Length: 278
Ligand code: GUN
Image 1 (cartoon, helix red, strand yellow):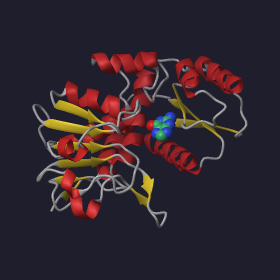
Image 2 (cartoon, helix red, strand yellow; image 1 turned 180 degrees about the vertical axis):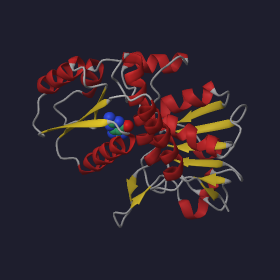
Image 3 (spheres, helix red, strand yellow; image 1 turned 45 degrees about the vertical axis):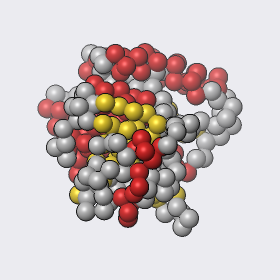
Image 4 (cartoon, helix red, strand yellow; image 1 turned 60 degrees about the horizontal axis):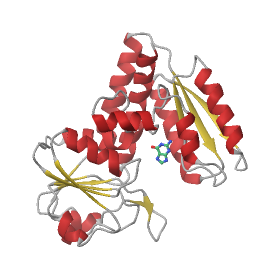
């Protein structure tokens, strides 16, 4: 039976460290949190991010814009926040309403305030391996794997999903720690066979019950990045937990696994933003 990886506990440790550093150096740090429209999941994420700011001693400034906001209006807000000396980090919650091109918005955020590490400049730095901002969710996953004491170097790691936010940077961070990394996606042939090779399996698909026990090697570390709703509207991940926990050595729950880590790493990035802005 797998050991549960406690994302709440690991994330609390990261937030405690951020808070201690901010208190020690008496830093004044501001994070702008921008939400556009009425996406319910986004509202929950944004509230959790603001709560984490409070815990860490970071000032959060919320900008809640209506669903019909134009791209031009949002770009103007980003310009204002880029210039604001009291704002060290800018977070624009995704997804955005369809009339707004997300790429245009991300590219307008100053790379020095890009605490999500979504800007092409920061993505490029992550690729090279010389970076200040961590990609929040993948960096949180790395912390969770480290918390198990599992050696990553030389291991077979399989990432399911190739998004810019999770799959691609996840593969990079594992590669930086000398794993042999495979990225799987919707066109992958014999997905189950590829996944069964994994010593460490990371699923970032966004489909409930996607990862079944036959896709998991005995003793694998299984990390579930999925945030889905099941038939009863209950929060669940990508992994069929009941059957996979019988095969894995370590497994993350949903909720309480990767989710809290993403937010903790955002706090770490906001502190880093203050540091690199001087
Ligand atoms: N939407 C889903 N995940 C994220 C995230 O990590 N950052 C932002 N800005 N939006 C998201």
